[in-house]
Amino acid sequence: MKVGLPFFLAIIIAGAVSIPFAQAGCSVGGCGSGSDSWLESAQSFMNSDVPLVGVAGTQSTNSISTGSFQAGQPAGVAKSMSVNSTSTSTVPSISGAYVATGSRAASFPAPGMLKSLDAISEKDVVLDVSGSRSPGQAHIRGSINLPAKDFFYENGTLRSAADQAAILGKAGISQEDALMVYSDSFGSGEATAVLFALRRLGHDNVRALDGGLDNWIAASLPMETKENVRSPVSYALLLRDELLADYDYIKSGKAQMVDARSFQEFGKSRILNATFISPENVLEEGRLKNGTDLRDTFARLNSSRTAVVYSDDIYGASVVWFALQLMGFDARIYSWQDWQAREARPI
Image (cartoon, rainbow, N blue to C red):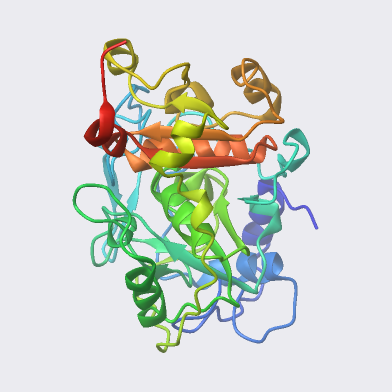
């Protein structure tokens, strides 16, 4: 069922009867309703504990600028992101272009890991992986806060599979859950980095929200400030270790290498025959390009060969990896630090 922004405005203006939304730990669509989740979201919006600000009439005029892909810092957004305040909450302000509420899936050859706004399901368990989230700050209603940084060591490398499974289980996430992952901005790379970690753990039913939280806000969808908690469970591992390429595989020459660092770093030293494609190359104003534009971006690559993205930043590498996956590539990630430790040499 495809529903656009005017539909929600019509419901709000008409004063539709509100329906209570998810209890703590419930999915975005609510608990046991059996009704259309988008309709319930629109109706329950009337009783939201967060007056939705940061939309039409209060948009920030921050200009778009390039930035680094550090945890909690969206790329393509000014570093000092302002917030609009209410008496009970803060909601990030929004600026720039946004993904339409309709699905963009048709523009990608393999869109399975992308969650469009019109595909939200009451069965989805929502993970807010924003590293900058603070107590009392608004988030998608029903979401569980699990910062992306929890999945990685301070040097950016992945924690062990056992550690990640323990983190997920403590948060009440199981292998059977259908997950929607988001962060404040898609361009931060937090959502795609966590999605990569989950896919490596064998969690196939996980998708990243197209456009991130700012796109959700732009569509006037429900938010809240309360902290949602799920009961701890056991998370079963179905490890797909091949998604994280190792040195021996790189040396075998079987894969085509994609350098996702800065152009300056690429010019200094790189893995032999690597193609330079930075995170900025797959984004447009901080959001993923559509399939037509990505086809041009990846024109130099052979879609029938495995592509391995490497970088010194897992967040940035994951954005390029995610774009490659949506375009039908068998894509993996490798650590530039590992290459340097073994045999880095100037080209």
